[in-house]
Image 1 (cartoon, rainbow, N blue to C red):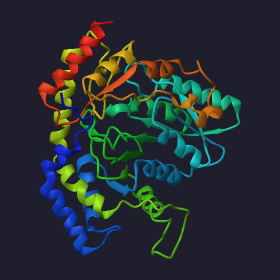
Image 2 (spheres, one colour; image 1 turned 60 degrees about the horizontal axis):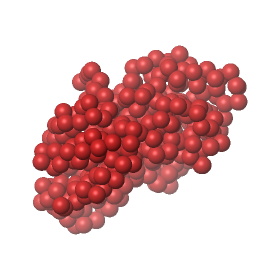
Image 3 (cartoon, rainbow, N blue to C red; image 1 turned 180 degrees about the horizontal axis):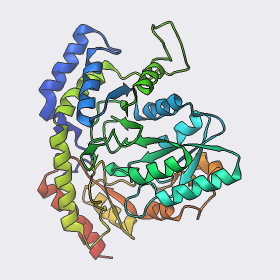
Image 4 (cartoon, one colour; image 1 turned 120 degrees about the horizontal axis):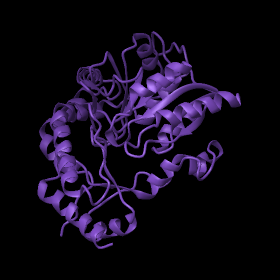
Length: 376
């Protein structure tokens, strides 16, 4: 049996080859490889898709988070609250800004920030008095938007700033509001494996705040002011390459149809796997971008080995929660302090998820999982 791709960029490229190749050729011909016209064209298209006023593209999702923290003036002495069950970029940007991460547990079914534990961690940090609570990074894990209304309520109680980490959720919705509008600032990633991905690194920051957007654009380009040689703040080299913008434009044009295909695949997985494993939660009024389809099961290693033997890839996001990672050990309270995140890390398994995975292949994946679980 042939191997199944975990993310099928090759089939997507074949679908869009003519438009992608033409876009790359245009960039090669006009030669504006940095901040060329395709960048502003992409930003306008992203704003229209997300329904927000400003989309500031940048070099990566990590840069998008860093820019958001820098624009808010977060630095030494500040506490930034974020989930422990996430990718390292959400935590590392806090330390790079000079602030400290405070890790929060997640909800056992949505895998997103637990508003109740968030409130407890803010109160504990305030009582300790060593750090000033300043911001919350609310991660939309695996494509499902977090409970941004509840998180905003907690933030308002303490006058904290909220950044939505939508690296995996661009294209998702809460009601009719798309990701990009659920927090004062939203950061996303265009890493190739994301729901909307380029052919390298890329990212964007979304906001409706005109003044903040101006600051973000300045930070993106070394902190420049009215001209290249006027530096009004400390910034970074965070510009999106024009080539990547040219690649993203045709991908964005078919993104809505790809999101629908991801949702259909998730439905098929649900129908086949429900009752045998714990399938992803469906929350009323929310639409996931389905960056990952992640199940929970007790004998993960055996099931993953069965998949591997059948030529089916899988992934574990995340095998070690942030507060137990060596790089962040000094900022956590050790094993047992965040029990939900720790339990999820032992049971989570992500199956192939992309808009070009056909029903027969999905059934083959499900048959393999069901046989492995049934053989326990």
